[in-house]
Image (cartoon, rainbow over all chains, first blue to last red):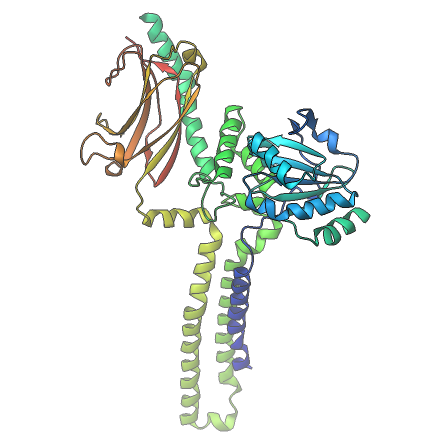
Length: 172
Length: 303
């Protein structure tokens, strides 16, 4: 009995090592958003192309995607085709948050690559980004028709994003 | 003259003290917030764009009179507790905080119990063996040996595990401070200078801005100095001081234990402080590898 029990510390040690080891495989840069389930933060800004004023109230009413992007952001070019595909499906509007970008190069970027966005919100100094808890572009938020954030994706979205994330969540 | 002095006293009494505290508070807050895109750097250390934005945000919030608590809450509301170097005690982190003590408690209980069960073993030795003195001694000896082995295992396995987990879970701030202590990088002071509105309105653009660090013990020799032309209506300046900006060989930022940074706007473009100059200074600070300071120019040197 005594000798069997002496295995306990060893098991405990193995368990600790297991947890430490599994920590190695986690991506430490991924931060869960505390905003999920909360209303989108308030903002007042102008749109990039029309130069009209836009606020959080203007977006609420139906589900939408908010995509944080910038022309300086390489990963944004990687996901751009996937955004265009979602735009082509014509089921859910995509709003862009032009994060800390130069207006002219942003327009240029859209001209050459295509524009999947319904409206693009300007965030020149990154303040709206801070309110959305953005820590790097691209980030993609999914918002339901009450204006609640129901999903957040950090990094470029892939081909499966629409089928795997958007469809099940908006069908709910 | 009298009016000048009164103004100076007024500024010292009401704004300077408060601002010195505020810049202290600012430095403390950005040290306690983690930069999100660069692992294991605080907002104070990081040069990333996001860190710069967040520092700016902290500064703004302080300017509008927000408390530390409100700022920490603002950050954790948006970036989770991960952004705080001192995460609050919550149900989900309870295990992290108390697991070292739990482990200690259980291992001590285990040790105690195993001692006890060994003692009781003596009574369980069959009478037939007990009568044989030699074999009793042998069993006792063996028990003694395994006791020592237990203590040995305890020391080898649990003590490092407990100390390590206490060390790593207690506070990342402590870890980062220890790591920082052994790192002897050359100090850089990142300074934001804000000019008081009343002074700003009197600036014509013909002035010169001196920014210099000197020892806090009273030696006037600047350890690092930089000079700028003042632009009319420009409210804030961002300036860096480092070891290369010394005036006298050997008298660098690294050579000082504690320094004070002063920013002075001089109409006469003189290196020595003269009446009519506008001045602001930091509290004495001990230099680390990277330092951030907020200095407000809000006093007038009386003549």
